[in-house]
Length: 446
Image (tube, rainbow, N blue to C red; front, side, top):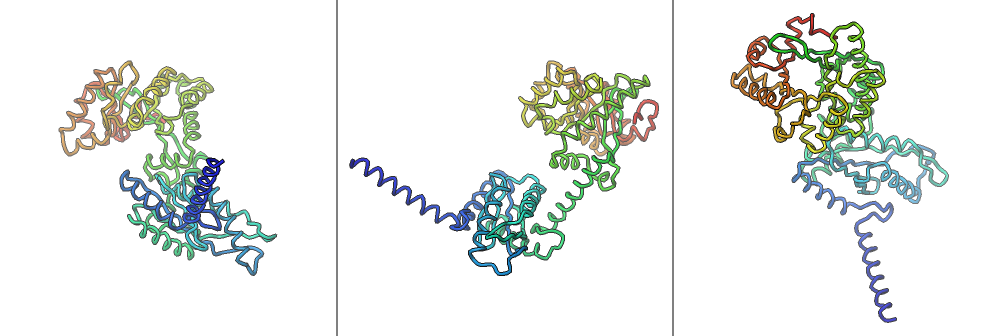
């Protein structure tokens, strides 16, 4: 009995300590962490960010606008309102985010691992959408309209004090913004986000209304100009998009989670073009290079999806050469080789893009896994200033030949580059100069 009593007393003491610790680290009304605990977590994120070069964001929300049926609001009423608001805020953010009550009517959200500032806007939009549903307290309904200030580490400061202050300043600026209820502290970032949102709207509209074209750029043999492949290149008709780099648009399409849909739509259109060529008995058996994003390459269902598209169109997989960035392979070589094997077994050709940005896996490209490599166009650009780069290009082509892989030299944009590269035997070339040459007989396939 004495032993049992001691254990009960010990357990009671631990329970009291846990309750005291909770009181010291959490807001007594909402149960969210308090300012002291949030400060500790911000300091922790700064340490991680400084060591691993990571970014995070602070969202400061001030709730001071009540719209609805309450003329006189008591403290009891606002307490219930803030309790419900805290629950909604926790439910709408990610599980990895931290929500704190910083002051009476001020809440803070700490968002770690910010890779794309547009993702912060998604959090803000989720909060705003959730708050469109009125709060029901004591038979009264209200809609809360918070103003939100955003600061980013390390853009807006490298100390907790700076980040908290900048976030509050941005929140004050948001009060005077009639267009939206949030602001970034840095005006250039705020402008960048606004620009990105506009581009997203243009992309979504272009996909919905098919306001784009697929152009087919030839890949030709340097020695005799014979077209061996063509590459499908998206050309956006919207002026706001046509001036943007394809890499930037691809990243935005990824962020919008439209990459899978748009990839399948594009592949369908390419298949229809191949059928037109085959029906006219022109350009038959010329594979089409089709570039996919790193995220698409990592999709476990990629092979099955592409096979289904081609089967529906009655197109042989050998008609498509999948273009994969070298970086996507280097991110996870073991998985990449498995994915390449699966694509090869399905009948697709494989092209490695931006080749020679890394050579750590070169010895693993045996067993006829890869059909072509495409050499980084920057090497061709260097030829304008230094002929020594010609030796580098020749060396890469030679390595590829020894591995029984064909090579494409990309980015040939002027006559000097074209004439210089004609000394490289056994390689293909492509670039804007093919259009300038007026290769209408074999090169203009659009």
